[in-house]
Length: 227
Image (cartoon, rainbow, N blue to C red; front, side):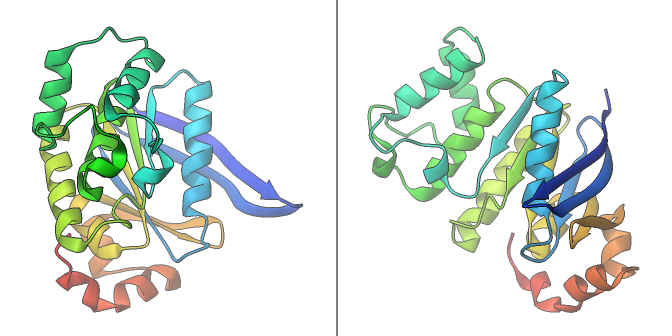
């Protein structure tokens, strides 16, 4: 079922930071939300998550850094069990191993705390938790910002493989056009709290129509990035 929201908006201290926005996301679609810092990308993502949850959709969020999702004083096993309980899912070793193998973290010691795992493994663990309930939409907000480019590229490739053919849609929020260009089929450009352009990735990259999109595409060094 297509995800549809209408009139998403937000204000802060009496100032509009997100103007009314409509969104349609098809099952399994890969959407990139790009724009300069402060353009309203994360605000739109958070408003979308809150609205969809209120509508009864299953939505999962992957933050910029695993530090935002993992308690350094708790074991990785504790985090996984908490995620299962939050989703009211019975413990299932086979399900966990399937996700861990897909994201290449099957060798991780669940008895350790987060700092006992590498940063890349921590972030893939967070993604595994997000995928645990097979959400309608996975929202990833700058998910590679805490990783080096090679590790980031590997992580996104593994996620692509896992999502392929499934119904979970992806919204990738990033200022990194190189990351988005290689991972999504549709790009939305934000500027000053508005979505100013929404087009298939190839068309937007080759013929951007707005000043904001043209400015992003003008920095051609993004094409050299491995992500």
